[in-house]
Length: 403
Image (cartoon, rainbow, N blue to C red; front, side, top):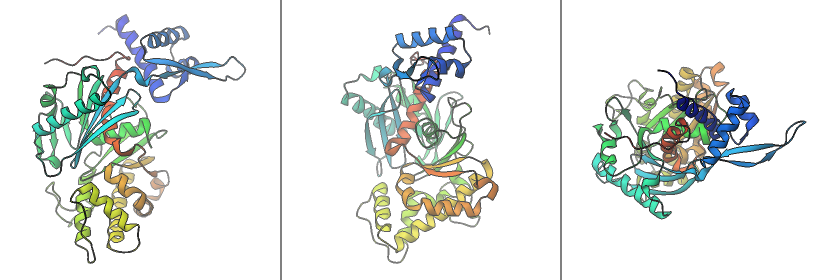
């Protein structure tokens, strides 16, 4: 198909806007070098983007032997996006500006309630209404909504969600939500989207090949490369939690035995702790609060709490060593709500175990770090979905697709 002048303009806008989003602020001279476009083209496109309110001038920077250069940056107030984290213990809805700064969030515990897709869809829509109402924003003015789910999303016809941890098989979540969501809606695996957020805004910045591990009730991971950061994170290891680390091990909810998730998933950790001599009952019946209690107790000294965290670190380190041997990343990031809680307490032991089980020449080039995006990390990851679409469209907001 022959490219039209309109197509070329949109492509040039997307190229420059993406560079500014991921690497900015940049000067016009930087953009010329980065894009390979002519000086006149860069000048015209930047002027258009400024005129459309997508980017703005952001001060001056010195230049060797020449006049100071004007920096250009993406405007956070260009638009608002929503990211939704559908997890096994909670649903979190985050409202973000276009550069993914958090504006507000709403979190709904879902333990003990129906996880039928219809009920979850209603909860998400209510959350979108809540976070937009808090800042006086009409939901119809959002640039889009992204949803991260703990499972696979088949997109051949409709976005059907396969999420064993939620008991979903071919759940039509997108269709259920589009009844009440009037802006573009995107759904993807939460480990994939979290990987993109960590590469854009978190621990993955500067990495060429990162594995982002999401630890919660379930366990997942995604491989993200810097070669083409606007493309989806490659889900080469999205079912990392169901790799076998003990062939004769305990049963996993997937139907196999000895899976990594059966040893380092949050609920398994809590169950294993309560089975140890000297274990104390928890004050809360909520999974996240119980795990926080466990970590707090472990910090007080030797005991069953420290023992179970040591065991968790061992299995997690073995799982990471397998990732290193298989994929040869330069970075592994521990993220997800349980990863954030456990990470500070177990990271040294995880690194030690990974070192002992990974091939020496591969482990020597990998760093293991904690995620940097906070409690709204997965929701922020989901928010990258509408952001990415607008970037690819040259900064022009997309319209909701019609059936």
